[in-house]
Image (cartoon, rainbow, N blue to C red; front, top):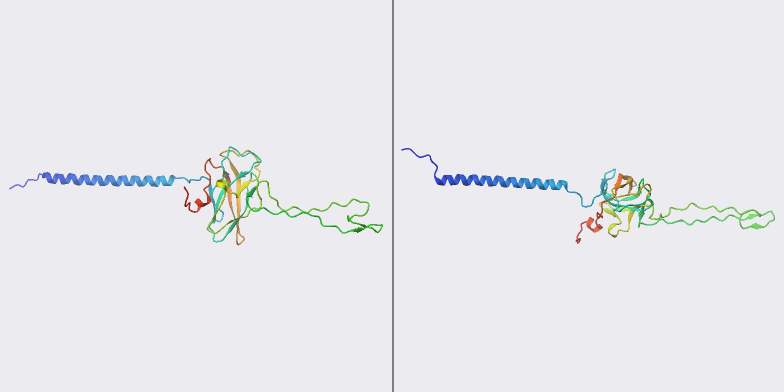
Length: 248
């Protein structure tokens, strides 16, 4: 007796169902792979919410983040140009910002302690005896005009915008924000802009920040240029720098 090799309807249905399940699974894996690839690409192309210069110091322990110049239609020669900077201290000891320079003018600290001015006074000259035997209180021989009193050189004085004596502490594993934005009262600024007007897209040239550690060693952050940031890109408030709890 010859056995029939033709598949039964039940067997055919099982074969079709298995093929459909395999195709569905393969399609699902393909979709998941495509989604994952899209997420990685999006992450790689994301930009910081606050544009600006971000760079490390020469020794790699101090970091500048979101450095820039607040947007303005222009800063004219002679104008005060504020800076926005955040400094992070990744060292195991405290550090202090002790200097800042630029080719476009003197950088000063606005809102910091002002240097005291030493009083200028001439030391009194001893009285001299004149040929007639009388003393001349002015200290010069009788009949001659008194000599001009010597004046001590003045101590460093505040500039029109701030103080040229810069001293800003950054604690170990800490951050210091220097910005006029969000109501900030302590920030760095070019006292009187030199050269051409500073327009949108422009920058300050050859900006150098100097830091001094607690042990006396120094390091620097050197920038070929510090650009003006686009409009509407103010630095975040200090509270948002450390966590932002309670921010809207």
